[in-house]
Image (cartoon, rainbow, N blue to C red; front, side, top):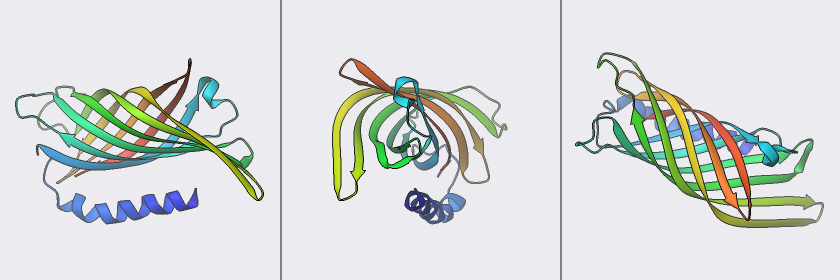
Length: 185
């Protein structure tokens, strides 16, 4: 987990100069990064501790659509078993979303939005038994829906967001909620 937090810090440090010099979010294509807590839910959450999420975003704003944006996500979530760091589960996902920005005054610095999308998620379970490591993985279709608030700052924007991710697999589903903070430039 320390390695992942260091990597997130490095990404933030590298992205900060670009974010500070970026123009407003009215550009047709923009990039973003986010990270935060990932909470396993329901049966999937039994026996797993809270984990972390790191996501990269690509935004596309068609000029003809006032309140809609398209967003592509590449996400990484990781959890460990309660009290046992030798057992872990990770999800690597690629999702396409539609983002609806609620109309606000043009001078407003706070802009709420909702999003929903479809993606593919590769889940991998790993158990470490001393000198032997056992792992298994599979890829499944999933849906995500969420809401957030973007904060327009001088030259860039930040956002806070929560999403419910539901991955379908062999009659079961895995659900988790990433709660993230990010920057868009």
